[in-house]
Image 1 (cartoon, rainbow, N blue to C red):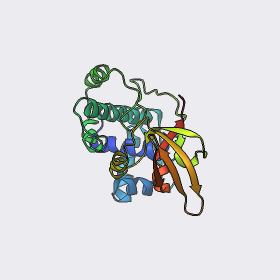
Image 2 (cartoon, rainbow, N blue to C red; image 1 turned 60 degrees about the vertical axis):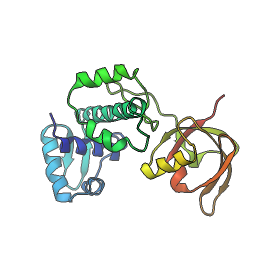
Image 3 (tube, helix red, strand yellow; image 1 turned 45 degrees about the horizontal axis):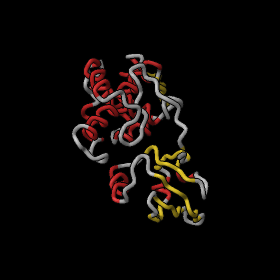
Image 4 (cartoon, one colour; image 1 turned 90 degrees about the vertical axis):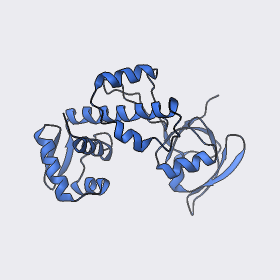
Amino acid sequence: MLTLTEENYIKCIYKLSHDGTKSVSTNEIAERLETKPASVSDMLKKLAAKDLLGYEKYYGVTLKSAGIDYALSIIRKHRLWEVFLVEKLNFKWDEVHEVAEQLEHVKSNLLIERLDDFLGFPKYDPHGGHIPDKNGHWGPDMSFPLSSGEIGVPFVLVRVEGNNDLLKFLDSLGIKIGTRIDIVKRRDFDNLLEVVIEGGRKEIFSSNVVDCLQVKKYEK
């Protein structure tokens, strides 16, 4: 059983490694967790001793299969709690992350399985993120950033990868998961997109926004 801090490290490494597919440097981890590289090195040695990752000084760290499984378990709990908070306790989608960060460290697997059943086995969290099943499996992700979408092709928002400020901004515009967005014009010199939001409202989005909006082609 891991401590809360050890779990945070495992989850951090998993996300930085693009789902466990690449090695991560000590400095990257230190920057993400806002701590000192020396402290990161000490923790990596502890996690390596538990056979959760492979660590070699100056060459970065990679998660082993057990580490990936552990990370997926934490992500699963986090996202299920987010669904619970939004659907059952009426939290807004920009209010749930910090609370779920605390709840994701619950150790009872039975509680999580009961929670999953209670919620009807949801596939996505309130931000559109996939929820791994109890075996760590999730469906393929066919989405792509709105920034790479074609002009004149209708899209539907399926996931938001951004902070609470972005979520509040989208909320103010009435944009949520499932909202249709059409690209009208791309301004190459400053990377701005002119879009039409479902209902006819026109907006101009910066690259900071559209890079965080994951979409699929709209199908009636």
